[in-house]
Amino acid sequence: MHTHDDRAVKVLNSLIETTMDSAHGYRSAAEGADNPEFKSLFTERAGKREELCRRLQQEVRTFGGEPEDDQSLMGRIHNKFAELRGELGGRDDKGVIDEVERGEDVIKAKFEAAARDTDLPEPARQLVTTAYAEVKADHDTISALKHRMH
Image (spheres, rainbow, N blue to C red):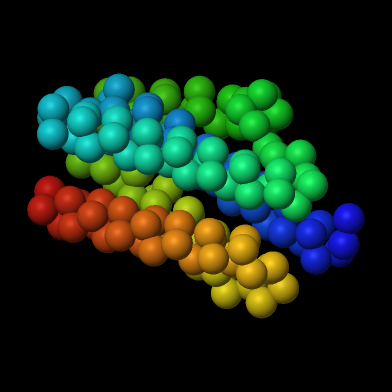
């Protein structure tokens, strides 16, 4: 494996982790939201993020890497979700949206940094750049939603 490929696998796996985190966060948020509009938005968003995970995992395989998956991740981040679920339970929709927006800030920053990574091989960069545009649009939707709530 070239160091170039190693780099791609590392960066992509780190994005998979964040994206998976985000998908789980949205699932919790959907459970925590009262408003049906938010519930369906969060559920749809969770699905989009899971789809993005799969695209990133496929890309890791093209570089000969072993992609992060739910199993390898769940153990590590499980406690975080339990905490998050505890935090989201009993919150009003505004609280849930604040939490979601925090998650969106994290994933946006991660994808932005990866999209700027000049060491990433071209196909990986293209995927990341496309994904970043999606993530950024999603982030802006949540920000707009938050402003509507205040």
